[in-house]
Image (cartoon, rainbow, N blue to C red; front, side, top):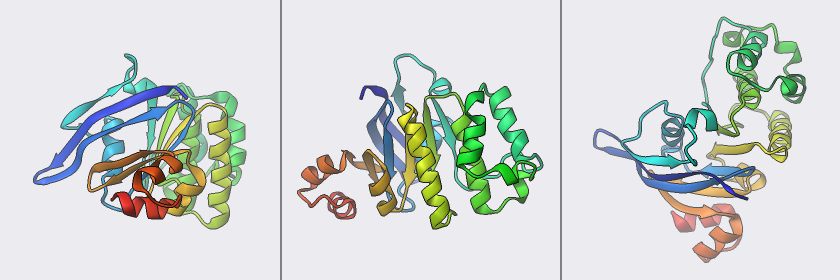
Length: 229
């Protein structure tokens, strides 16, 4: 796979706390990349800096001269955008105003089981329903890379499996998915490669086999993470 963009030297401080320290890694076109780390590792901060929601103190994204806004779209965790508007309105807004992928609309609605929710205000949805609506918005955006913070948070087992299948289908169609996941078991089953983040620093990058070799460990992502962090 070719490199879609490269992150070099991202650092971010909140007063005396170093949330990110010289974070560097590659994102490849068409891959499912997992950002793995415990709560407080800096995963959400990294995504916010990449999406320019929050400025980094230093660092750059190398993408062949492309603007970040045309390259990646960020789906945060735990938000309710346009709470008074319906799910249908949000999807149409994504397609119309944001230049989203109209041809995918019906398929995304079916994949994420949103048909019965289209007329519901986003602010009235449950956590799991809102997560599915947010993922639908992300999947309809035109950017080649999609950053999703905790895609399985708030979902039951059946919903998580359905969303896993939907995300895999979109990745197979060429979409690059960069997912922040704190449950290592979920990441191991789903991702092609991994960036291990702990205390704001990258502790390893690569496939499970590459990381296991680096850690001199068995090919078990939990053991590899513990060995490298």
